[in-house]
Image (cartoon, rainbow, N blue to C red):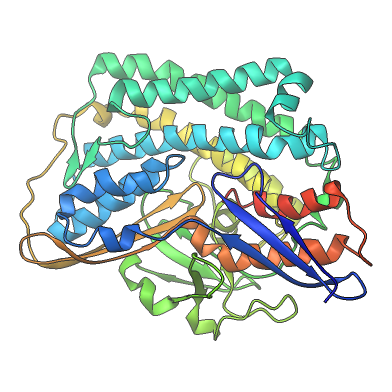
Length: 448
């Protein structure tokens, strides 16, 4: 074999990873691997803990998207205790989720992804970063920082913590919203909505048309998709049914607690991260030519599986997106476009919830009693479908736990996208830092 190229660390992602690209004697790509180096420990050390502790514990899995783990865990705990939270509690959970997701999507698009598009994928890495963004577009950068701060202010001011939350509890939430709080937060949410509208329009005018060639060439694969939809097929981040769509657009819906009938989990010796796959499609095969069992989650996946968006402005944008790229759309860099459509839905949802009179209701929690049971909780995290599966004994202590997080669902697909990008751009041993950045862009699209 000729040479091994290591990209370590992969930059501008929310975690740690490296890529190993093996070249043959002719200098062409023979093999690629995406190594995720984060230890899987939570499933094991949660055993023996009380179920009601889980929402406060598992949010430490990720400091970037703690609200996703917090809420998926609460839903699993609700199921373990056999309770249904009051409608006001559900709306308050949804509100905090929406605000958190607005901040998260702004973070990824402007801080992590934008340097590739505003500065350019081939620009020197010394300027292809968030500092370069600040220098190239200082007024937008100021707005981004303000909006991120505003989102954190809303959550911290009402729920107590923006990171590692304790707000949601089994059976409901820990506090109601007063009318004074609603009056304070509503204009702030409207400000986030206006910036979300600006962000999508800015990208449609200044980013996506300029980089259509990159969109059509970097990390492109044709696989299946997984996401959450409501009974009428609308995209939902908090609740609904799972929809698994094959590469040609045929799909099947199922309940959260049936996920083991549809999804299998495979382990490779070279990665700490599991490889989920659609087991009804056959044994996992990550070949670019004939992939089997591979599906994706996250933004592009969700707008592929959904029949429609849940809010009017986002729906209008989805219609425009589908007119241009079809359904399902397979270009990996379209994850960025889909992320901004979702940003708009999250911001619209937050405003709608704050305008709902029931948001200030006082019935926010139902009593819970320990019992031996299994509970599966699922939400759509920014990085994809998030499944928490708990089993507990009669004292309410965890006996078994299984977690499949958004990035894990995408593990097989990310490995395929890395391989496609490497083979597309590295020829006869010729490459430079711009080409290696294009390989990273294939990973960055998934916001892992």
